[in-house]
Image (cartoon, rainbow over all chains, first blue to last red; front, side):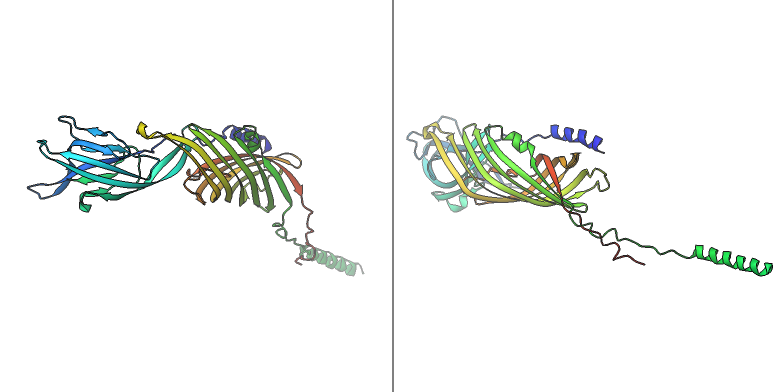
Length: 164
Length: 236
């Protein structure tokens, strides 16, 4: 029995590999806002949510002096991804929309608060701050006109839907 | 006279034949008695942990003790684990101790060399501290990069593991063993803004299941044999 077990021990020793963690970093320092509208089918009367394309005169972010998004002719947005300042716990966005004709503009604002936690992903990837617990602190949008979809700031992740 | 002598001889042989058929007195010894009493204590260490300690990023040791109760082995592992890992964007350190308690079931009970192939179950607990220092760049360059320094001063955790392996007697009193551990159901408490990362005795706290391996050397100290009270318990 010993003659069988010793080589088996050697094989198992060689198979002693270590668990290598995956280097997938999903942390993000941006908030993604999608613009939506509700449409009702005239025949079936079923309601569906579709993208809404908005034209912005400008979009400003608190802490950044210049406009983050500036008006570009014929450029519309169905979603915008705006940065947060990792050193602060709140951020305010100012969205100045313009009508299709460009005759009128409307300024809306939305302020978010968030918390953070640190995760070590893997030695070669490093450690990252993950932002979570996203909340709308105050906004000019009606409470029924926006929806917090995800409270975590992750890559390719929509956080808020605003309905027009 | 001759007739009487012949008759007596026949009677004698008949009695002898009958005597041959009568059951002799048997003494049955209760072989199960005392089998659950331990016969020795094995004290060992994990060689893989010692080899890993040659690297500057890891320091650790582990002591393994087991004792037999028939085919069951009560096992206790106690160890120390400290890492100093260079991250892609900083540095992570931890240090702490861990304890594993459990039982192995030996499936090579009749092996004359007392080699073991076993399956076992362990409950592990760990107590450690950890710290991290790193910097992240914000997505908007105007916000600059943030430098963060965090620590968890007192974290405790526990887990369960299923173990399997071999223990082979190399020569009298000296054993070598290989142990594979499938660790699962990790739970940590005491973490702050830094999520507990590397739990001594377990590994990456967020990973489950998690594999672990040990390559152990054991020395066996035999315990004095208990006298079997076979005679007093004999069934006549």
